[in-house]
Length: 485
RNA sequence: GGGUUGGUAGCUCAAUGGUAGAGCAGUGCCCUUUUAAGGCAUUGGUUGUGGGUUCGAGUCCCACCCAACCCA
Image 1 (cartoon, rainbow, N blue to C red):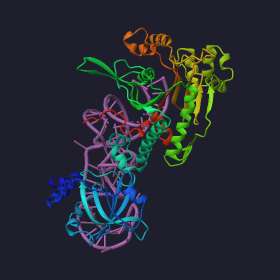
Image 2 (cartoon, rainbow, N blue to C red):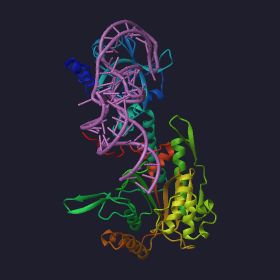
Image 3 (cartoon, rainbow, N blue to C red):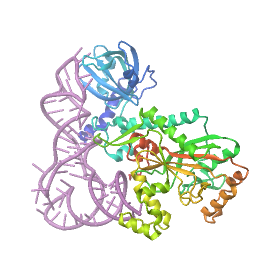
Image 4 (cartoon, chains in turn yellow, green):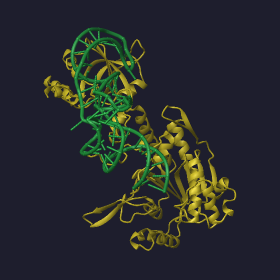
């Protein structure tokens, strides 16, 4: 019993913690001023500099009287050389109690080892935090997907590639904001809790406000509030934040996801398409340094290349269908179903004829489209709230941007006729007046300028730019079923 | 919701129905420029959970839990 306890990895670390305390040192130390982070020192390395840095110990090479350790954080890794002769004896005495995983603060001088490694020769060190649990395998890192998602911090600490994906995501979001702000768009904040969840067709999460005695919903889209701001006189606005949809979880769906919506008064969907084209190219060049985005498989071989070079194709929906089958629109609805049968496309779940066409579009156009493609002039049944084209009332003035086989961004010439908007919303809500956002319609009746609007699924954009195959790989803490105790 | 695959030491992974193993991490010893450091020795297991079949189950069967992938 006692032997078992003695050998337990967690117990050993707790014993070391106690030994550190016994030496009069706090194993969970306080503030430590650093001159630079480990990665910064390494990137801008200069010999003979006095530096103070700190980080988690991610490797320890013990040479007896001298030690090499790696200190790491989000910025990268820096090697520290500790020589028993050059460090105060009382500090070196507790070094035996230091483990991989502990946070250490180090003061010393930069130098290059004889193997050419930029390093810090430590003059002193301080334990900043004792780690009471071991880290994952130093070479393979965390492989178990469950651990990667449930304990993301272990993934970040042990898998450099994961850290880089999330840093890229952070940069992408930052550069989108910078791009829009440089063009005069301003970021606004609208309610995430809404009494009537509008702006999209999706199941909302429900919650309750006690003081008001009011049921509220987490927003499925910010659209109706952003349009109220157009009514109020804002002309170039965006919101980049979370939406919530109470629907299935998959490789491409997380219940909460990040969406950019932007509205531009006096513009239309064509102008919005150009804006998105310029924005995505700016972000790709700034964050990825290229417009040729390479996706790699598990072995690191390039298995997909996405070419973002402008101009991007803009093709009407019907033309794309005709590229698949020139006679599609000459067939009867039954003939179209027969065609699907012959081409092994299951449309048994499709009720309406336009749904059959849309399913063919998804399978044979969308999923096969890697380079950017603006699908324009979509059938009005697909986008019931959009403005009908002046030239052809069977289609609407919208685009759907497809990249990487996924719908990444829709863009609209927004409907600003309050009477038509009311009819459409009433029709959509199917007579359930509770679902009708009358305040929004009153706002439209006061007058909303014609405007272009876009939405961009940020998670999918990040997937496209980083080569992630699952949305869970670009969301720090994806939702999973709770593990049983 | 349906199907497929998987869950073994802290981590990464092995194991024809027949004594549960390796590498890393850990522990002990050696080593003053290593970098997946090295050398010698060594600890560590309720094989996801619960049943069943069997002389014998990590392995076969059933149910359940969790995850990944595919389909709807």
